[in-house]
Length: 299
Image 1 (spheres, one colour):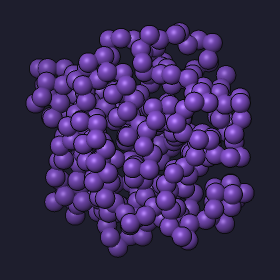
Image 2 (cartoon, one colour):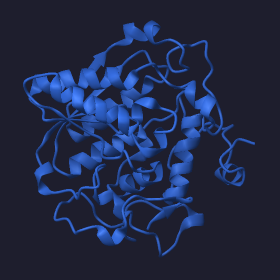
Image 3 (tube, helix red, strand yellow):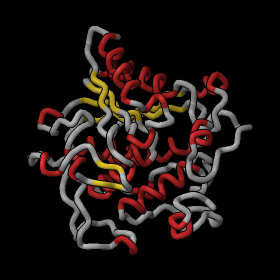
């Protein structure tokens, strides 16, 4: 059983069948990314669990050329999913949504990445609903973005009311309009505890609703739902993803602050994955050594 920081992955490596797809290739010394110096080792494990989808089913060739609408923010998780599905041969349409978020600079990152890959990236302008989604630090300017490692209360301050249901509804409508068979989003296991709309129960309910909303069937997929964020970083490294072009910081400044909850989560994921983090952080951001020594808390 693969173990990460005391949490075991749900898939045992000996149960993984080989796949003929180009979905996954083992990490090797010739890769174009570098390990963080303190984690350089010849024994870096391949994340075998990444060969299966969220239901534990081995990936097969029937995923190739599937027309898929991906809810795409330009962030770390959704960009890895973009590359992950692209590598599997999906016909991707990356839908970004402007809901008036504080860190809307992420939309520029999304547009840039998609332009380089030749992937359509329409933007749904829902910015007028921002006042209707008040109470979150992402949509209410008067609420400060919490700093430090997420606690239950500080993480709740970043919850945008019903965001994923809204995004999934818009993405489903777009999928139906272009004849897509799937809608994808990048919810992962680290989101489950606090974000209700990233839980399996929510996604299962939405998947059922999406199947019932039209004569044409659309499937909801969430390949990362049982992955850790470190798993996601490893997969991005395997795909030679341009991490530096992605955006995570909820403060939405010129640089990642390196202090808010999502920046700390990003930095921890790179560290646990053993992948060098190329992100440029603000000058007052604490060093990784300091964060590691404080168990990823600011002090």
